[in-house]
Length: 100
Image (cartoon, rainbow, N blue to C red; front, side):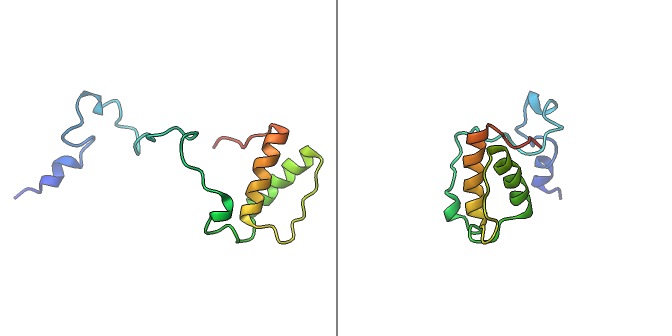
């Protein structure tokens, strides 16, 4: 007896249609919303917001603060506060994160 799910595990499944071959190299579906339309949560409401800032945040914040001529105390800096400083300094300096 064959498993009915076997037919759906091939590229695109049974309803794939003519475009399946074109999308064969794709992993995941495109986002239904553009990144600008997606909901952004306030960093203060993050579950990790009270955790210490990550090394990556501190490194990037150091570059941004230097570019803006500011100094930000690293002592007690949380992930949420680091994110808020990063957003503010990106706007002030025009520096945007690198695309991966």
